[in-house]
Length: 153
Image (tube, rainbow, N blue to C red):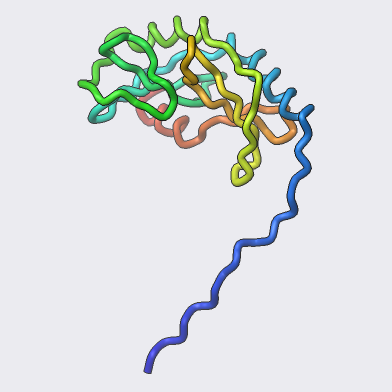
């Protein structure tokens, strides 16, 4: 005798949110105002690269991929595969954050119900900052915050 198949579960039906350009503009402006207060945290060493968390009020906002070969950040989505070395990484990313700027656009991520505002250094996007759907609050990267706290803030 075979067991019955479990019922097929459908994703709950969502009503589409009405997105307004004004909310995206508020999100962009919020990141622009917060950017001077971002600071580099202690580097996190992986087997083949180094990430430097970016903190705001002791919460991690995102991570910057650090390339020890060049002493500069790598673009988002392309962590350098090199021998990890943290020497000077935190200080360098603090310098980079002073030169960083907010791009004039935002992406909406429906599953997370938030805006994602890109922050660039030179021609590289180095951060994706999450902001609430109404553009009023920064949303920390909770998993990264937990990782940072495990390694010591």
